[in-house]
Amino acid sequence: MSEEQSPPVCYRHRNRQTYLRCVRCDRPICADCRIDAPVGFQCPECVAEGRKTMRRARSAFGGRASTSFGGSSSGEAGTVTKAMIGVNVVMFVLTLAVGGSAAIGGAVTELHFALAEYSRPAQAPVELLGSRYLLPTVAAGGEYRLLTSTFMHFGVVHLLFNMVVLWILGRVLEKDLGSLRYLAVYLLSGLGGSVATYVFANPETWSAGASGAIYGLFGALIMVNRRLSRDNSGLYVLLGLNLALTFLVPTISITGHLGGLVGGALCGAVLSFTPRPHRRILHWVGFAAILALLFVLTVWRTGVLTAAYGVT
Image (cartoon, rainbow, N blue to C red; front, top):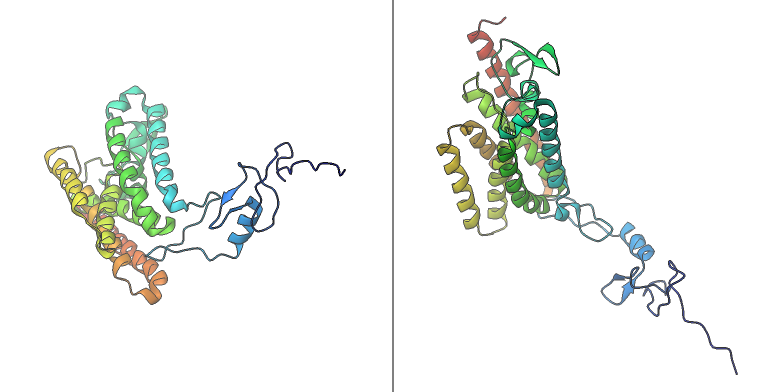
């Protein structure tokens, strides 16, 4: 009589008996190691080897999504959206650390003085971390404020409202565009809102928040949905409600919101109407053109303000 064979064990977990096998290499795999395939199951090594030779899919706009181990792309997972929310939250935590609990209700802190948007050329000393500093405004060499202000918020309500809308819209648009194009749209929209405020608003008004970037997502998503023949009715309702708040609440920056909306719509137009054969290059050329326009407007406004305030 022949000796009875022992049951096979998973090649990765030697203490687990299994009768499942990889359809490619025929090695035994347990339930935790198996990965569903069109037919049967595969082991992690065979799946990883297959991905090396598999051409990664692109979105309808040419964006390449990097695939994670579980099979979902970074765009589908909302990686950039989560990162932008994380940056905004971290900046608000730093605001609380610098300004104390008063910042929860929207009080202006030293960090706002350092990073928020303020355009008057004349510099004024402020208390920053216990010392007095001369902090440059936008028109006095502080052009970085046009970007850093988009990650600053006045109070927890301001932050939460923006982050909720970013979470709703951002993941959808990131999945459509791919991570890099989506990030470009987000940043250009935020800059568009800042530059619009710099050009059209009172130069002695403080401005901050991710609202310009978020309104840019509205504009870009409307264009993308039109390109993909999707229904925009729900998006129009949500945008209409937000615009109503923009004009009804006196402390909200109308220029920042509308500037971001226009900037996002321009980015969406670049993505939607670029000829397909050369779209990968032309998308970035279009983004560069929008950035150049924002740069020209910034330089022009700086010249106007410095002349108006008698700064040489």
